[in-house]
Amino acid sequence: MRRRVHTFTRLLAAGGVAIAVAPMLSGFTVITLQVGSNPGALAVIPQTGELAVVNSGSNDVSIVDRYTNHVSKVPVEAMPAAIAVNRATGYTYVANSSANSVTAIYGYGEGKKRKTYPTGVGPSGIAVNGATNRVYVVNNEDGTVTALDETNGTTTTIPVGRRPRGIAVNEATNRIYVANIWDGSVTVIDGSTNSPIATVPVVVWAYDVVVNPLTNRIYVGSGDGFSVTVIDGATHSTVDIPTMWQPASLAINMVTNKIYAAGAQSGGGVAVIDGATGSSTQIATPVGPWGYNSLSGIAVNEVTNKVYVTDSSSKNLLVIDGLTNELTLRPLEFEPCSLAVDTASNRVYVSHCSDSRISILTE
Image (cartoon, rainbow, N blue to C red):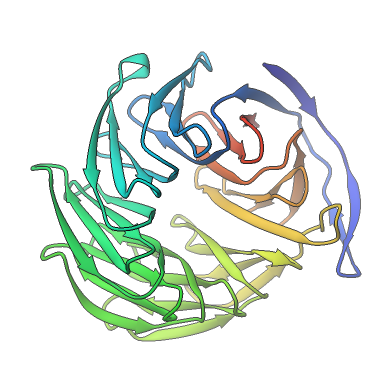
């Protein structure tokens, strides 16, 4: 375990534009922990305060204790790729992309138990409706979603579009939204019947999707376009909001009604969309050592109003102040690829996919 405290100020250039990176007003700590091989997606279990880390290289999930940083492991099946937590029950669900299954993990620490359910082909995304205790798994290779009713253990196969990827649940309306990459569409699923009720044309290469249940608006990011599509959940009408290229990864702050879209490659950048007005502001991001960005993960801390973005082309975690849009950097020892935020402890967890470590940042 290593512990380091960093403070610094820099001026960098991206695409010929000077970017003033603000000085840190206070120190932050970074703890590096050994987990499994090739850690990727992460999720915080609110009931226990634990962190669950998907390790695709060792086919297991690392469980990190919030208070002691003790790491235990739970075996899953081949090539786990995605994770989601039922905030009502604390059950954690892992999509195993090469085993065509989903593993449910429950319990605490070393005593965690497992249940495994079959899915379609190539499960690669997952979302949970805590209000109905149902889990929805995106099957990327056969164009379906598997709906798992954890109450009785039954599964239902729901047809969607070609190469589905992103998925989000609106618990207020019991609607599920699936972004279909090859179709440039979103399939709307009625959670009460487990059936598709609409197909909505959206941005090209529809990649990620997030929902604001307070406004009943759905936001869809593009892996190859220059805009984010906003869907009205009541009417399915759409509006496209211009952004930088490839606004693929999305996060939402429901407190401020702001949506954040990270530019996946090349010039990077983060678009800040005002959910009330539809206006968009772009924040330039400093390029990595090879002269480009590769923004792969984004998350919001609604308590502190900060936005965190991983850039796997550099060894920095990007931090945006949600009030001022000011950008600061958190240097890391290894290239970051995915992250999760624990608002209860003000921790940010970052996985290093090409390594076997995670970083824990505490402001």
